[in-house]
Length: 340
Image (cartoon, rainbow, N blue to C red):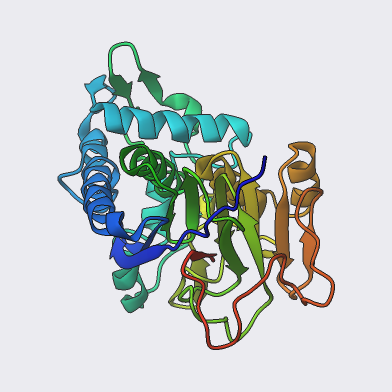
């Protein structure tokens, strides 16, 4: 017996939260507004727990804990657990104890304000304290952060929040859901027939516009997560230095990397984003590290050379860099997202 599957229509909403772009797509347009309200509430809770830029956040309160165990909310405990797990999985290349290093290079407020500040900074090599200095006790719901250590969850929190939101919304609404936070994309529920169409690109831009420059490609995502990290989307000038937000924990300075962007697909967006950030920090040979982990990845070198690992879909014949069918020129794909 066979059945004709009726193509699902989709609906999307775009806005901003957590200092980045938010894109929500659902396969049932009637549920978009209610899902968007749930997403907004979820992201507000994440911001209150995890923001490094809010003096009233739970994370900021840990700065004054002076090495004493502090009881934290289940939400922050989960976010910290994800960050510590990412640090262990990447051999410390992704490390939540780079908060002070981030501040030292000028990333101490919302990125739109960082770009407006052109005061020079003094760059000093200083190794991050290390993720092993942080003790999270899930049984008691407490975390102990040594005196002088400041945490930054920027490398993991958005991707984790996207995972959590996509799963929550799909369960609540009973439809397919895509949540993208600054290009960190998680999907859950039943996807569209051809998968969620995700354009991977070097430059940040809206989902319905082809990027005017830089290599790009489109993949169909049916489950899990996709993330892109790079050094070109969030960079700024301070004095004579061009800086970016991917910090090498070994130096406390922006990573010197041969890669412009790295994109990874993984069972979760949090895993994908940890791998992309680590690949930038690891630099030469990152493609071999990703291959050993069995992660499909696409790395773009500073000169534009594109390298892929096993499992990354090959370009369709005659379709340039596209891995799946793109909408006709002038049309838009309603279930499209971007990872940039």
